Image 1: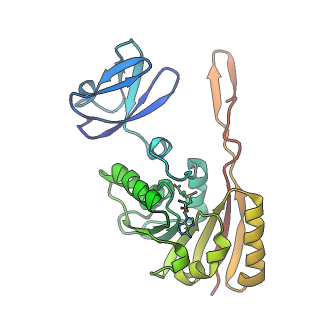
Image 2: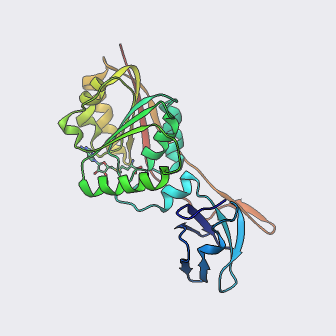
Image 3: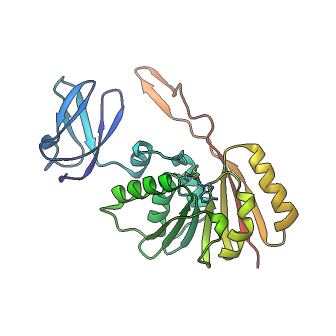
Length: 259
Ligand code: SAM
């Protein structure tokens, strides 16, 4: 049952989604009228309600995917299709200790916190104070009701070094990961897995050159991956791929630390 201060996602007839925080006696207003939150509070997940202009809205608790796509962005987030593969390629397991830089908007951080579970730990560095503050708010707003791993979120530049060590996994989502390979390799356990998320092929080239020149004795290359996802739609007699698709997001490069 929905309570005051819960998050809810409202879905209209065109499948547009609106993320709201429920507040007694308050309203959500959009181009198809108003909806009173009092009609949602006390009702179960999955109800349908009508706006003042007669639009039907379906109401659910947001999934983490819906939440990260709607939360306030400082930096560009990693899309769910890539996050899913990062979690599997890096084999993030319950109880794992994971290092992340930069936190950005906190999208990947939220998924890491879920994947490591109650006994796990995520240490995340973000060098920009405004992005750090925004990520902190985004994360707190979602995990209020969840039991997740321990989070150490720091407003810190990875160039200053990584304080802790013995990480099982590490993920770098920043522009020049090759500059910080030494620091991350030192902080990883032997056998630990490192992922780098990059948006252009020139970045992959620079990273691989650095690996081949200076890290082939300390890192084992797992591979370079690009994930494509295509949604399909059924409308009457037509069943076909959606006309619009997110054509490019980024690449995931994965290594493991050698003994
Ligand atoms: N993965 C994040 C998410 O899903 O929300 C998005 C990360 S964003 C693309 C890259 C972030 O790395 C930016 O917020 C940037 O400020 C941060 N960054 C860049 N260089 C950094 C460094 N040397 N140390 C820490 N953070 C850094």
